[in-house]
Length: 159
Ligand code: INI
Image 1: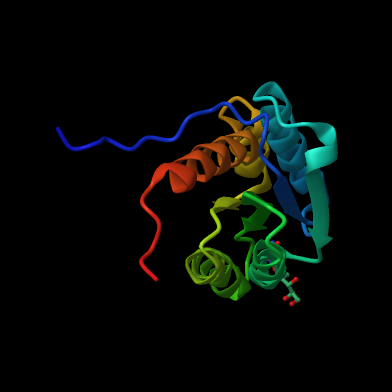
Image 2: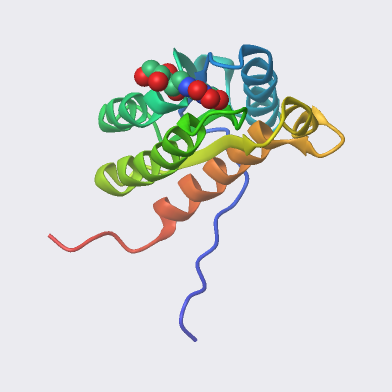
């Protein structure tokens, strides 16, 4: 039978970077806490986690690309909150954060997870950053761990 590839959650050997967006800082801090909690619970050593702050979600892709290109990390976690408010800025920032993070991951071959909330209100963001709807930072860190494990297990690119 052909192999079935799946990522595992034993992360004691992983080096992980978490990039947090300072815009909507209260939410960003909670998402970062969620990500750190997840990494710790899955065995990642404190010394093997680096944290970087960027001004806003728009800046996440560039920082993620450079960190992922360093070769020092098995996975990168991006966290932040884009809250709609009354401006079309929301759409540009949210779309670029998602697209740019995805591109950075494809270009570097390093898993970069998307822990960026895109909500209509601050209340919705609070619910998803340690409130009744969980913590998206925790979820993004878990996805990063699983993907780092999966990427190590998958057949390597030719050449
Ligand atoms: N950045 C965010 O992270 N969240 C937002 O909700 C947001 N809004 O709505 O404007 C936001 N804007 C700042 C943006 O990410 C950049 O930091 C800024 O445009 C400078 O490049």
